[in-house]
Amino acid sequence: MYAIIAGGGKVGFFLARELIEQGHEILIIENNAERAEIIANELGNVVLRGNADEASTLAEAGAERADVVIAVTGDDEDNLVLCQVAKRRFGTRRTIARINDPRNESLFRMLGIDATVNATQMMLSVLEQEIPPANLVALLRLRNTDVEVVEAIVDPRSKVTGTALREVDLPPESTIAVVIRDGSAFFPNGATVLEAGDEIVALTRGIHEPRLRSLFFSDRPQQH
Amino acid sequence: MGCGRVGARLAKMLTEGGHEVTIMDIKSSAFSRLGSDFRGTTILGNGIDQEVLKRSGIERADAFVAATQGDNRNIMASQIAKHVFGVTRVVTRIYDPLRSDTFAALGLQAISPTIIGANAFYEQLTGEPAVSVAV
Image 1 (cartoon, rainbow over the protein chains, first blue to last red):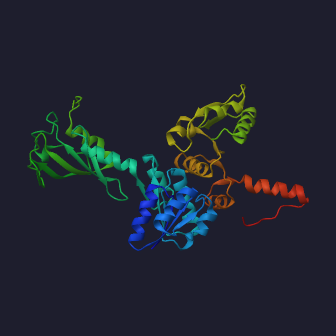
Image 2 (tube, rainbow over the protein chains, first blue to last red; image 1 turned 180 degrees about the horizontal axis):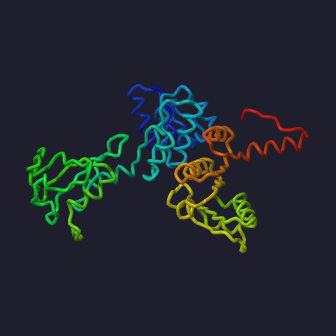
Image 3 (cartoon, rainbow over the protein chains, first blue to last red; image 1 turned 90 degrees about the vertical axis):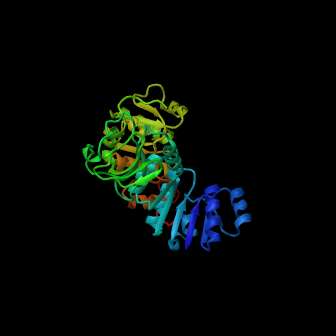
């Protein structure tokens, strides 16, 4: 595989080192002379000094024959435009962009970037998974759909506590897939009675998430 | 978006022509270019941030102009204006002629000061119409 990496910061550098180790052909585009020299000393002749913003630099880097262009500079606007130019002008097969502002994720997808990586969003997801019960936690969204896998812990004050599943008024297009009680997971049926402290894993569409959330928590504010 | 020499001048031309104008910049000092008699609105913030664009009233705008120093900032903001907020008239300054071609092909109305400037010099110097070159 031939990969062009735009941006020779820490992300670009370590990514390049791993890819070289795996036997891939790579080229880093880095504008800063000092930084370019440091990378060349560490990794060899794999640096093109230049401004990846200029379409001519991408031409020089051989974007036309690249299997993938990976834009990992610190600026979302640079990563976006670079990937778009690679794709539209040079026909690069696959483009991957680093994103800093999580709100740009859907925009990048809309504008044709094949994949995005967002460190801020990842930190947020890790944090959410560690936050105690008061929240419905979105574990993941199924690729290219609005279907989410969510997790919740049944609040003692919730109206579903002590209720058999078949009596629970679930939102449409929502399924409780797994219940985890006392550390062991089981697949519930209609007769399963939910207990306070049960962890439930459910599938739902994004739009139904608020209704699902309100089921498992009481309206009274919670303290923790 | 962008209250540099071009942005400020355009904003004043438009307000004097009776249009309602909001101009944004990431530096508050840039607004001094507008003078004290500017009749439009100024917004401090980054135009590639959708929240800032909303605050500027983009949802009811008839036109959007990206005229900052950064080609990529201009291109990204213009695509947000066009594709997220559905603004019909979007004009973008793109210095790099190659990028300008690419995004014109993607439907952005691009103005390249590099091409316009070089052509103007050429015509003044030679008295002949400018020729197209690949740079």
